[in-house]
Length: 165
Image 1 (spheres, rainbow, N blue to C red):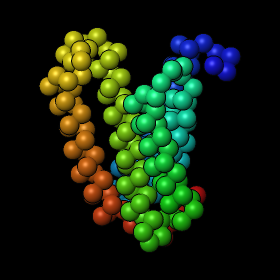
Image 2: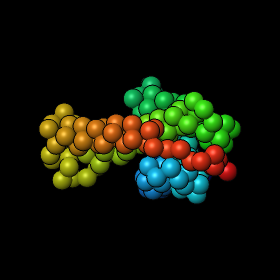
Image 3: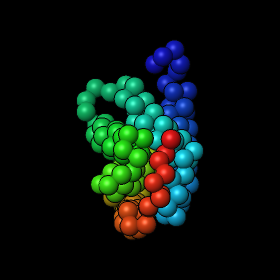
């Protein structure tokens, strides 16, 4: 694993993921105000791409749901990156950007919740199989919030011709 142990690599992967989530949430607030939030957006895109890529470096013997989420996230991030840096939010690329960026952020938060319920003892007690109400309410609430924010952002994000550069 590139000369570092699995535990260190896991910690690094989680740290990058958390940086991407925080930067994405900051950028999302800006997008709701039609601000392209250049620095948080660049950090969000880079960290979330790196999170998805590093997820494939963990040892595995078969295709896992995490790999599927990683592939979907990378596709969404490719669209978001091209829409912002390649097409500068012009025409159809503005809503493509908001939807792709927010879906990739949602997927990262989705995985965060899954991991939290697997690794944090109190949450694991409440939802040991991740089919219990506590887990379903957490995931359902986050899904609904992202659904609403994605619609609002797609309607409100008009960065006045400013491109994320």
